[in-house]
Amino acid sequence: MDYGVHLPLIDLDGRPWSLQRLLEYVETAEGLGFEAVCANDHLVFSRPWLDGHTALAAVLAATGKMDLMTTVALPVVRGPVALAKSLAAIDILSGSRLIVGVGPGSSVRDYAAAGIPFEERWKRLDEAVGALRALWREDGSPFKGEFYSTEGIVLEPHPAQPPPIWIGSWGSEAGLRRTARLGDGWLASAYNTTPEAFADARRRLGEHLRAAGKDPDRFPSAVATMFLHVTEDRATAQRIVRDVLSPMLGRPEIELHQLLLVGPAEECAEKIIAYREAGVRRLLIWPVEDELRQLTAFWEWVVPLVRAHDSPDAATAPARIERRR
Image (cartoon, rainbow, N blue to C red; front, side, top):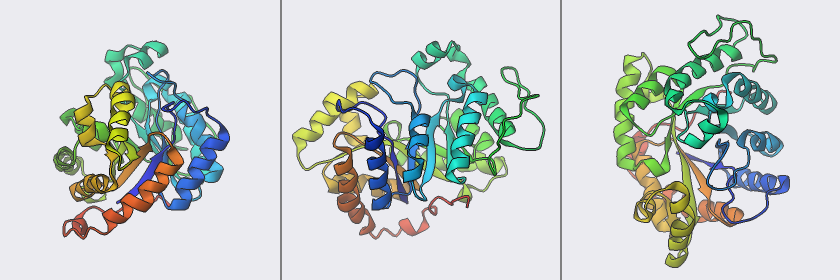
């Protein structure tokens, strides 16, 4: 297992955004040893949300050799042509380090803002993935569907090679079939799964992958949106969940305490070990408040506890994410 970080795009503590803040965050993460930096996507949200793709492009110079990920981008809301154009630029400028996670999104408000019927999101997503692939190929047939067509559209410059596309799914059977059929990888959501549920979904995904002629052992996966606050103070942990995460995510407090990495380092490590043994290849954390200190606390307090745990199952877990380069 390796680790990545979400860019701090949500206003969680009232701090002003600045380019310097984002750069310092990424430089800290890269210096500690995180393998990836990622950006989520919303137009409107319950809290102020900085545009993810713009932020990801802004910090490119500080990312070193880290993978860049969208977790997830919304091709239906953004439109596949506009999204393909902006993500191609990020991939080119990063030297082909981009992994494109996509999903329909779960926000009715985003669809209302874009003027797209929410009930069309799944059919449109299927077509949008095909459109993205067609737009990033220098040669090949255009995509033609009910909602989108790339016929006659040439988006130049093209990426050196089309970025891999990972499909975001909470683990439904339809979502896993879609992931196997359309994707190059799978993104699960930390506040919508457990280690046990992830292991079960990964087993079912393996069946769909084999049916699609793909090797489950070479199909990468990650758990995203793992909100984090390492603290030995129970009152602080309770406040973070009660006042920040529960109202923002619309999940009960008791459920989030069980799912997310909020609390003592040892408890956080136990949850990560369970995910590692369930087959998670990459965990993407999102610090809540005091983000630089939390990155350091995670790396210096939690990660060593995970590494010190000699699990016989860890040796059989899938390998780390394979870089395209």
